[in-house]
Image 1 (tube, rainbow over the protein chains, first blue to last red):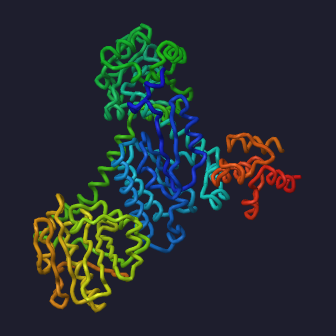
Image 2 (cartoon, chains in turn orange, yellow):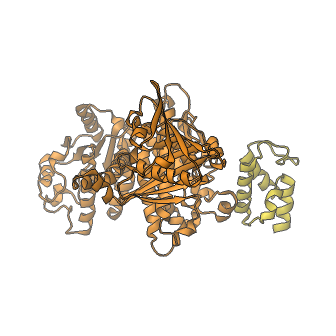
Length: 561
Length: 72
């Protein structure tokens, strides 16, 4: 097979893979290149500590994201005492993930493969719910971003923790993995990349005797074959049949290719407790012909190429016959010990089909809907918006000049379009300078309600604090928290703080963009006085002594200077 | 031992190794390469390099000298 077959780009360049990790993964890049040798792949590890930005400027076909709990920037020991640990860490990670998502969409749309976050490396003898919850939140977020999520726990389990981790490497170089384990991880990633490069499997062709059920129906009779809970081996076949059925539910086409008398096999399928029936199959070939001939006919009938076929049979003769004569078909032999058959099917057969995509979308959808759906459900129960908002138990946690959130604050100025009064964009360096300036307050608020934490989503930048007339340079709110009247409570706090520092007046502006018309009257609603009005800019002032608090709902405020 | 060290260095640095090879003479011998060299020496000779030795193992000669003192 020529390499060009696998090209995922039209420019005749090598397939490129970018590796983003919060730990040092070298020489993972070399291992991965080696595993993918026939495919002409170049692998680059994004600069360390630049995990989330590394992807920005590269033209990339695949991005592999691996974040390890060992290096999550937050002191993990606080998890034992701080009950908010998992929530705050998870929302921190979520916002970084969404930043990465944006970056990736801006450049080109690579396929994204990631590992899930697991607590294994730091686990105690007892289950730690804080860590479990944090991991599951991270994994929901990453699941929504990626094309497939590799099970890192499984990799650690396969290899054993003692064989995977290199503690001196971790404490010295932030390189926590032994080379053998990295090689193993590279193999897993390579398998996934290959699966995505090669044509997607669409059809599963199955033998009957000792593949779908135990025994030979032509000899044992339809009542003598094993396929249900009444025998240990029957349980295995039953489980596999159910897995096959689930594949069909996910869009995989099923076909039978068996050497049998048609009537014998057909009778077996009529038994009520058999999970699969004749109707489960798009194509049935039960005869004494050569199986390569049968499979070609199936391909013709279904109008699909043989390279999208997976063939499963218990006979080593049939498998080697197929492998040598129809190598484009992926042929797999049922393991000799039937007790390992379900595990084999889950780990060797199912991954050949594109299930990961479906899983990721489901995860994404589930996450997207769950808390929002709860909010909507609750909303319907209330007569007024005020009642609804009160029921949410909203709380804004405002921090002034929070150096730890510079990246997120800069990101908010660049991402937010709808509820953004001036739409000024700032880089991280610029935000850092503003945060450190004594003349400027950068007020950022994170929002919580009883359904969850929305993270840092409100921002105001106030300039000219050294004069009696302060300037509201930036005021914005992320769209996920719009509609809960948070802006009133936030501004009440802001103005109250300004009053206490001796400020007498605040000036503000609305600068019209294509997307921010929903806030064009915001300052009017807040009681500011408009003193300049052009097509694109409205300017306002407010005498602080005249201001009366506007928030009427129960919204808790925590303010940290 | 000398041959084994040369083999390790060649594997990581992917260039020819001589008695003059060191992080000062070779651009390939950067901090990442250094990390890999230390990890490989530890793995191959089953030792744990002392922290204060880390920056000193920056040439073929010093690595061999160190290993001789360590494992004779």
